[in-house]
Structure formats: C-alpha cells, structure tokens
Length: 402
Image (cartoon, rainbow, N blue to C red; front, side, top):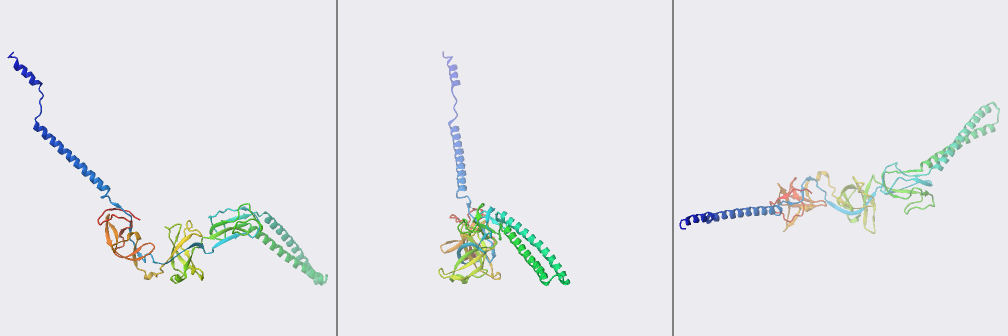
C-alpha cells in the first residue's frame, strides 16, 4: 500500500488545471482598458468635430452682390406718381360704312394685329351684284357715247355743206355731250359699287391689340340691330395702338416744375413689381384739374414688353434727375439690404476669400434701387445683402449671388 501512494499522487497532479499567474492577467486587463479609452476618446472627438462642422463650423449661407461703379449711377428720384397705361391714339373703334351679315371675324380679345390684318368680313354678294349692274350701265353709256360722237361728226360735215340746219347740228352736238356726262356718271357709280364691295372686308389701320369685339359671326349690321354696350350700330372692334405705349399720370401742380419734356422716368407695373421699364416724359397737358389740383402728363415707354404692358394697367412712375452727361460722376451703389446701422455707425459686410469683414462706410443719396456709397467701398468689392444675424469678422460664408 505504501508503495502505490506516490503513483496515485502523480495521477492527481496530471488532472490538476494549471492557472496563469495573477500578475500577468492584471497587466493584460490594463492594456485592454487603455485601448478602449483611446477608442472612445477618438470617437468622441470625431463626433464633436462633425457636430462642429454641421453647426458652428459650417460656412453660413448668405446672398452677395458685386459692387459695380458707373457714371452717374442710378439718378435720384425727384417725383413719383401713380397712373395707368394708355396709348398715344388712345383707343380706336373700327366699324363699317355698309350694312350686311358678318360671315367671318378672325380676331379675339387680346390678339395682336398688324396693319392690313382682316378684322371682319361682311357678305358681299348683293354688293357684287350691284357692281355688275353698275358696270353694265356704264358699258351701255359708253356705247351710246360712241354713237352720239359719230352723229356729231357727221353733223359737222353736213353743216358745212348746208345739208342740215344749225338747229339739227346743235342737237347732235348736245346729244354727244349728254352721252359723255352719262358715261362719267355711270363710271362714278361703278367706282362707288367697288368701294362698297371693298368695305365688306374690314382691316386694321394700325399695329395694335384687340380690346373689344362688338360683333360675332352671323350678326347682321343694321341701324336697328342689337349691339354690345359701348359699341355703335356699325362698330366691329376696339383696338389700342401698341406702336406708342404710354403711361398717363396725374402730378400735383406744386411739383410740375420738377419735370419737363424729355425728363427720364422709370415705370413699374403694379402687377409686376420686379419689372422696370425706362420711359421719358413726352406730353404735358395744357391745363390743370381745378378740383384735384393736378396736371396730367404722359410718359412714353422706350421698349415696352407687350406680353406684360397692357392698356389700363396700374403703374407707378418715378421721375429721375435729368443730369447732363458731362456733369455725371462715377458712383458706387449697393442694394439697400447691404447697408446696416448699429449704435450710430453705418457699415457693410464685405466678403474676401470666403470670409466676411465689417467695413465702415459713408453713405450718400438713397434711390429706389439702392444706396450710394461715398466712402469705404471700391469697384469689384463683394457685399452681403441678406439679413444674416450671426456674422462676425473672419467668419466663413458660402459663396452666393443675388
């Protein structure tokens, strides 16, 4: 029994699990913890940087405008007024001089027409018949004239030989003269019949736009027929001349001395507040309105857009300074949204290399389109025109234009 004991102990030793030393395990745990801490720190820094880029560090989006100097800039506004779009010839009502049924009317309200375009056509069959009848009568008169002229010629020879009396000779000569007058009368009747046939086709005498149609196809033109309100018995359509578009404005008589013929103006339709049209004063009415204390004037559009400018539209008219070219100086003008005031100081934000910089300025005259800058800016500078609240010197902004 004693001899087997060592062998048994050796078997137990073989079944025992060998564990690592405690010191090595602790060292490995500390390495893992440090690695996890470093990883967490890196992730946190990356997240913080991303948040920074998406919020505070992101370039702020603003609208910008480049400063451009020009001679005289935008002239100052000396007078403003409200009025309506008209034409030089006001409105023309086109009618017919004959009666009949309308068989064609190829126009619609708002359609632009040119000189000679057909507005309406009246049934001309009866007028064509009258023309043929008048032509037949004229031909008969021409035949009678040839016969009477031959008789007069024979009478002239016979009177010389004493074959016929003087009374017979004078009768033959008078018959020839009567035949001549009859031919002239009947020729005039043919011309009138042709005129009536020509009046069956009504054409436009101007380049213009159709304002109203008083008739439709099938309507009969007669003095007792039904007509639309505002039209006469023989009226076809009302046109406005688009070759000379104008704006009619009432000006306070106390301000009339501020403008004169040729004064430049800017016309802005109420319906298109972002559109501006250059114009000039072309007409001053000869008398004032006693009740309103105003004087009526007209300004002519230089280049009207007929897709926008329409008769009777409401417009705002701004009369500008009429400065001679020789007296105009280079001016720098910026949009009104670019100029800011704070604690008595006036400044703008300029953009250079993607960063904003505050620049103090000296402002000049304010017009409807912007503000003149007398000091602080130069031609080619870029200014911020949007109302950005978080701008600061050196802050990055995204590039944009107005």
